[in-house]
View (tube, one colour):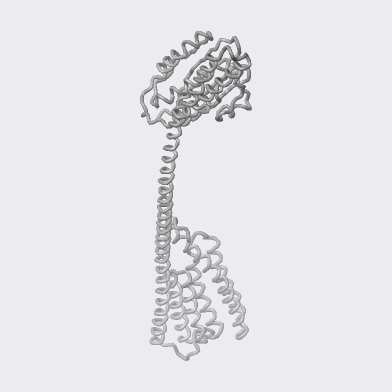
Amino acid sequence: MNNPHEQPGDLADIFHLEIKEKSDRLMNYFLAGYFLLGIIFAFFYETWLIAFGVGGLSLLAFYSAKILLPGSSLYQYVLSVVLGVFMAQFIYQMHGLFEMHFFAFIGSAVLIIYQKWKLQIPILILVFIHHAFFSYLQNSGFHNVYFTQLDYFDLQAFIIHIFLTAVIFFICGLWAYRLKRFNEIFIVQTIQMAELQKDAQLSNERKQHADELRKLNTTLVLQAKELAFSNSELQQFAYVASHDLQEPLRTITSFLNLLEKKYNDHIDDKGKQYIQFAVDGAHRMRQIIIDLLEFSRAGNAEDKREEVNVQQLVKEIRQSFQKQLQEQGAQILYDNLPVMQTVKGPIRQVFQNLIANGLKYQKPGNMPVITLTCKEEEKQWVFSVKDNGIGIKKVDFDTIFIIFRRLHSKEEYAGTGMGLCITKKVVEYLGGEIWVESEEGTGSIFNFTVPRT
């Protein structure tokens, strides 16, 4: 009955079933008590046959109706008659003792627990028939007929007696009816109260969620301001890196070249080697600064999405590598690349970095072959850049995307170890992901996704 999702009709059925079961259990005790009371009354006037016969048949009638008709309420009307029969039995056993008539009123009151006013009708009819028939027999002089200990029970006394009995039964029936109506109203009000409590709980939850949302929005605004400030500082750093830090390096490189040229005759081979180390270090430092600048800018592009012909874009990138392709005898193969909505600058940078990687990491004397393909999926494009280079160990699949992580010395392969890190950052900026498939010595396949919307 406490489930707010139950309908009023369902709850009423459940409630009435509970009332029925509890009333049946209580009536078991009442009927057992009535039967035992009949046995006790048998001691007064030796009415054992009446006690066991009538009492036993009454119990048999009630429980037979209850067992044979489990889904019916007919047994309750049988019970009403049985309670009237017990009244008649007790009156007879006690030789018309007037107080035995009160068992009719007790039976009427007991029937209230079923909350059915109609149950008063059978017992009222039986009381009327019993009183009319037995009073007539007793007044007519029949022997061994016990109805009252009065000498005579005239019509006036009979009418008054039946009228008062009917009034009492009417009051009990009204009480049963009002009790049922009260419980039905109580069920409806219980459901309404549960719904109101549920609405109040939902309202409180909404209020809590709204408060939490306001707090989160405030936090996001603060974080956005902090992020904007950090980006501003990063841009300032990028400006310093691209101008102020590179200028001293250019000066160092220029003076080292000037020193080598002017004092070439006065410097031995060892000194010239040291100067070359310094020049290479300055060039390398400048390249690191350029890569750091590129890394800081990666994913911060403010370009709008546009329609990009990837086939044409790769063709342009291929032309920019023309000299290197001729020197290495390399090939860049591609076909059926899509036209898609994306940001052109970053996607160009991704293809450029992956092609450059494929050309760089090759065995000496090997002619690079780089193949670009694309697979269309429901929500994204999946691009693959395959090379026939030196390959990558499985344990290094994650390491290669970490900033400044190199798998080879700068003597073997030049670079700063930032290319793939920048590429990963750009792909994630575009809303995709990147991963590698490779075996050492057999080449690599770099796969990355670009959302379709």
